[in-house]
Length: 360
Image (cartoon, rainbow, N blue to C red):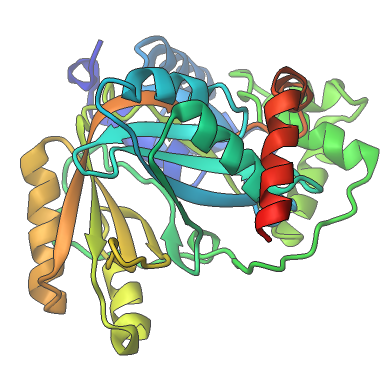
């Protein structure tokens, strides 16, 4: 299935689900009123785009660092004959949410997160060993300029279009962020709110029933999460390819240190840029700013990258294409998969931890 089966109302609906989902008792009635359709038609259309595979999930989007998890982007060099097997072993880790093969010497790129109390480097060492990587680079966020995927389903956004970077798209990132002391009910609600929202008249009441809450109590808890900055927003996640965005490219830029404060936020202001970060450099990796771009074609991505280069004057960059997707899921917090993975990898975790302790 593809986005060719959508009409204009479907496209406006998908934009609304991504950009401005209302935390109200009857959210689909609220959205329907804005689009000029009924609540039942709104729900029916949501059901249809989900069945088409365009709408992946509608749920809370939590801030990994704010919940006490440690996370980083990882780049690895793996021999061509080993990469598929290595990627499969990396994907088994419950903290790996995105895992791609890209067209570079660093050919495996994945995101890794570990829960509070875990040693990030030990987990990474396990994945380095399991994947048979020759080099593994940790690329944590130094400065977050923007995070927020918004696919314009109407097709009206130009390659050089700008968009305001909203508050929820620039959450705080620090290496020493305090681990929150969550109550049991807060943890239970996080487990529920990270799952797909039911498509019914009062979906938050259905959510809340799992912990003995009514709809208003559930909404109050979600607002509490927003106030605490644990939850960035509540929104739809799209299946990019089925939605018509068949290309994605990571533009990495060698930006002089003295220009980072100017150029990083400017790059983030491009509407087609969904993620923009400052990350560490290495002797073999001079690129300090990362921009993620999605397009309906490779040409769309290239047009945005060209516009960024032209407008910022940064000419030293690389364009890394995603040529194989091994894993793409939402990170799930406080779930049993973590202990299961640790049990299955207990021996190599112990060996990796001992090796790192000796090295330190």
